[in-house]
Amino acid sequence: MSAALPTQVGQLARRSVLRTLRQPAQIVSALVFPLFLLAVNSGGLKDATDLPGFPTDSYLTFALAVPFIQGALFSVMNAGTDLARDIETGFLNRLALTPLRGAALLSGLLAGAVVLGLMQAATYLAVGLIAGAELAAGAPGALVLVALSVSLTVGFGSIGLFAALRTGSGEAVQSLFPVFFVFLFISSMALPLDLIQTQWFHDVASANPVSYLLQAFRSLLIEGWNAGDLALGFAISAAILLAGMYAAATALKSRLVRT
Amino acid sequence: MAVDSGERAGIEVEGLVREFKNGPRAVDGIDLRVAPGEIYGFLGPNGAGKSTTVLMLTTLLPPTAGTARVGGRDIVKEGPRVRALIGAALQEAALDPLLSGREHMRLQTALHGLPRAERTARGDELLARVGLSQAADRKVGGYSGGMKRRLDLALALVHGPRILFLDEPTTGLDIQSRTALWDEVARLAAEEGVTVFLTTQYLEEADALADRVGIIDRGRIVAEGTPAALKAAIGRPTVEAVPHEATDRERVAAVLSRFGEAGEGTRREGASVLLEGGESQLAEVVRALDAEGIAIERLQLHAPSLDDVFLAKTGRSLEGAEDQPAPEAGSEEAGAVGG
Image (cartoon, rainbow over all chains, first blue to last red; front, side):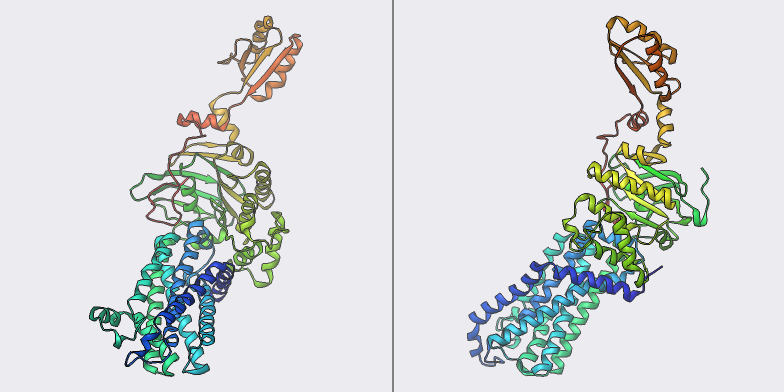
């Protein structure tokens, strides 16, 4: 007897979602921390809108793109830590003794990241709009924004899976979080790229893919519909997912040495 | 003991070796055969190579050398077929503390490919069998050690395996939980014909459950046989009798001498004898002393234990004879050796 791939994915996805929903601390920190930073930044940097060429009068609208990236980064930690715990406790061995396919394991494990990504995107957007931010792309834009947020969450989640499979340690996975956070700080997080005056920072931020992810979110919030920015954002998100899944699949083969 | 092939095959191992990088040979060329329906006890101290052997036989760790067939299937060439035949409860109950017992069952039955219509019934049946029906909807994080082990066993039985691997299934359990688990394992072998490969560091567990015992130390099997044969091979049981009156000591010694040669280490106030006919002669000894009218204050039977067997074969006592830490299952780079 061997379960079909969709059954395997479905069952592991169900478990992943249950695990996510039963760990309120994971959810709360992934929701509250980015919103706290949003409040601090939008309050402290609102005068930046006076700079010539700043794309909007509302720094809150400009800064609202940041929580979507921060929230997605949490999935590195959440998805990775869950899998690392499965390795540490031997639960992965239990799964390995079933006719489970590697693809089902990785896909199923990311289901929790999808749910968390949906919850995060909906919360950030709702809180931002209630606080006075704008969404130039309207209701359809909200759906695209959520889709981009979820795809990014899954992409970063796959990196978490890779880290867990490579190291087998929850602590090692958690230590990755600040490393990824650095990428956010050396991006166009606080100012648009063309307004960054310090040359080295401008160069680094221009080379940092996170800047273009932020721009994709901002295009929906500030401009409306910008096909180029959105395509680039989704392309980067897809590239992160593909690279993460490839690395995770390779690491899974080394981790699961079953014959 | 003949082991047939095909549907009724047990376990056949020849020259199985497992080496880890920068480490000693965790398993150093073991040979063993387990007949279908037999309970085989794999006894040894921590770090002896028990868990590494189980990981190899359950296909979770490739051997460095040697061959093994489980249920008639080669563990290296036919891994998926082996896994379809076996159930395993590995060291440490590997459960998700955030899921309930019933949710574990649902996951396991689905992953093993049971038809949707059968999953719930099979899960409920196994939960009832291990006495967890009442706790089925509670999160496993709140289970006791015994409950976790019972759930672990039930999960291993989901797909009706013909061969069951239990890696130290009762470690850390209280005597009540331990006995309940022994009963279930014995029932599986006796009533369902399940072949059981059981590792343990508990002498009484091997004694109580196993039809045959293999004693492993530092990766090598140092003794194998039925518990009775292993104990008989290293010596006969000794009876020591202490008379109520010290002046009767010589008379006691004379009576005991009819049953064999005098034992060593007898206390000054009594006498002892190595029973040539084994433990069954104890009743005769009692009758003979009674017939002579000797009042006995204390009568003790010292039967060799499996620990004595281990001591005789390795020069060390089983208890406290720890070697190396357990490896991380599934890691090729693990540099240490499993229990």
